[in-house]
Length: 95
Image (cartoon, rainbow, N blue to C red):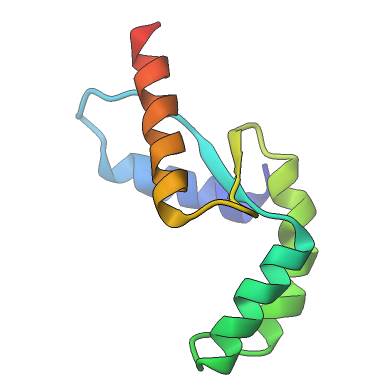
């Protein structure tokens, strides 16, 4: 896991100190063409800067190497993504 992601996890977990919970690490990934399409749309709508495209493309391999459950969102809707997350959580809590 790269340092930035590790720091984000630690920051979130520190806020939950004292609570009983189980961490299920899930990473949402997509293929390069989907990423380019999505970020380009955000740039066109002034939601992101142009630099976000190259920076994001450079980070794709980092997400693939993380020790997490991966959900490929390339060809699925937000609702389908949420359903997959719910299913992962349900299956994990059954164990």
